[in-house]
Length: 195
Image (tube, rainbow, N blue to C red; front, side):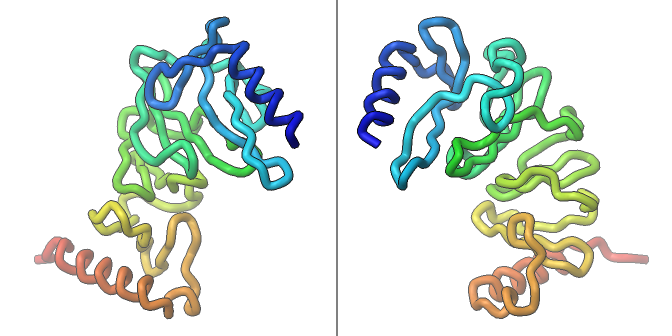
């Protein structure tokens, strides 16, 4: 493990990474990367990811990302989040293997927005902050509390915490139960009256 840490330290010094913006850094060789870490024998090793995909096997960031318009729009680099530039929406999914940073293909860039700390949406889809696209969820029917810290949502008659459907057992949890009650009250209060 000591050898790995020494290698990591020497690599960072050789590459001379400098912060750029919103989590991105630039090396002395002009590579664009973001600082992430992976776990080896319970030790966290810092590295810089420089290309798309889970293992740096894709196109280099410097060939795709427009640095002048790049910005973080929701979430964070550790758990999961969304970023954008003039051309793309990007998603980062953090994990013990260093995470995955990719271009969100199915998104409508013009209508994509972050709706709270847990979710984003475009005109057709809902996106979980950590796991990305939630399949078969219509963004027009998906309901959340405007409170940014509560990750409870409702789609038709099903409740979600992040991207997971809540079962009867999970809904017994006092904190979850309270959040569901608040969400239902909010939905009822904001429902348009029918003639």
